[in-house]
View 1 (cartoon, rainbow, N blue to C red):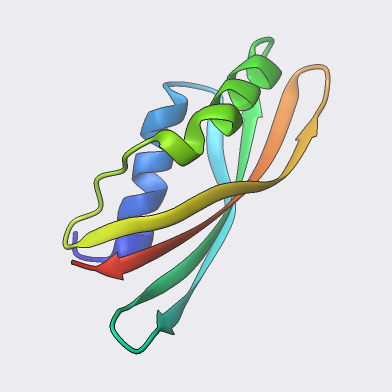
View 2: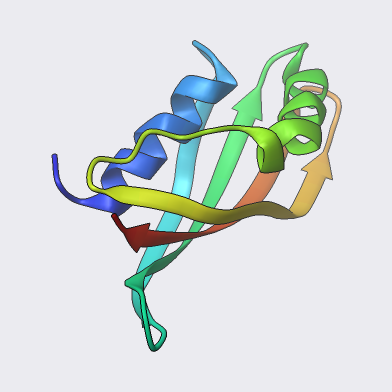
Length: 101
């Protein structure tokens, strides 16, 4: 459970609630500055069901203020970079930066 990418994905799913949500794709790459090291993450999340758009919009509107638990890492930055809404679905692209704590 030390992999920040896996842990962050699980935390995103937990914040979106139960049912009708999945990670369609994800990627991670190492990142470092002069003083910190960590990783950049991209997740494409799909929500389905009659409340999908509402849930996705609420999540997108509050994500930058949310705290995420990622073992031995801090979520330094997180944002929804793309959103697509339909009648019974929503797709979100979430990008994040984690740094080793």
